Length: 271
Ligand SMILES: C[S@@+](CC[C@H](N)C(=O)[O-])C[C@H]1O[C@@H](n2cnc3c(N)ncnc32)[C@H](O)[C@@H]1O
Image (tube, rainbow, N blue to C red):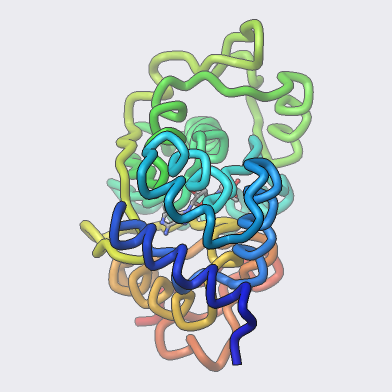
């Protein structure tokens, strides 16, 4: 039985879907409820249902709500030891391929994508890589494409080395007023495009898919559908790299994936 507040939330999500095509109806309710309550407070709305006319009649207000619901929190070399596991265990396999297609799903404002690019370059893999970086949030993608990252250069430097970086961060970025700017050759093999994991299909076959700290916001059914999407988008033997809290629970997924390095959330598409 749903509470009154949950019913109001369902109506809001349906309205957002009908008006703008974004489908949050299978996201985890607890997390959605927390964020929508906060938005109510900020706009001094008494109930969730009073948000409906605001976001339906104002695209600008909808953008603000979208920002809340998509949680665009990210950082460079997030959980560096996880990247180190990718470098140590997956890069040697990728090195045996002449071309590497990588899908970075839910890339937010790009910090993680550029982190990967710098590491690929350190290990001689960047020139053969094509990186498809996607997100549901166009504003985040526009920011990512500019290659200006709002990070502390000092923190990024430390994380880069902990993640297995063997050159210097200065090789890749220039320090600017509020963060760092990625140098030109390292923005070239990345294609940023809008893609919604809840509604869009996969495109092309990949050797590696990275999707970190996105699935945690989905309910079980949606998570299952997205893992299936990834399974279809990977070559047999391809790798799926998830976030710290995104473990694949076996045996549910064992027809499609085996654990390659379970501790660091790296899975391999079954043959
Ligand atoms: C918490 S951030 C994680 C960013 C980055 N992967 C990281 O781990 O630092 C979640 C990202 O997932 C994106 N996202 C949420 N729902 C999505 C969907 N249905 N399709 C594609 N991206 C989505 C959000 O816009 C946001 O940029």
